Image (cartoon, rainbow, N blue to C red; front, side, top):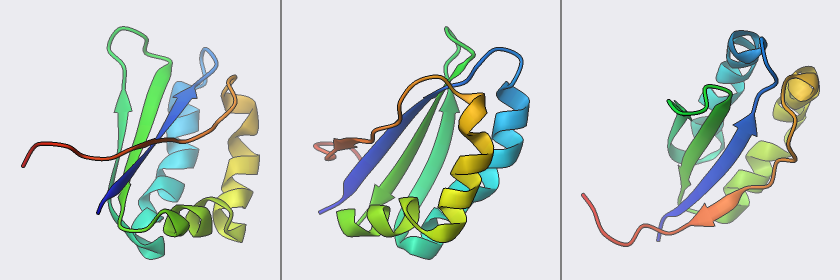
Length: 97
């Protein structure tokens, strides 16, 4: 069974590019912790809203990723770039290819 974690990042104004420059390398490390795939989407209606979607085979792999020393250090670097608390929303695929 696949587990999909979704993180909604609401970036503060004028910091979107700096946030993506700092966070993209951390997002790209998810496969090193067991992620099947990952993506970051930017809302076209709210350009300050980014969604990070990661597919996992095991929810525990997300914990290993999110709380690892390297990802925690990058989260500390970007903490002033977003303004909403981050809690993952978990989804399970139902239909699709």
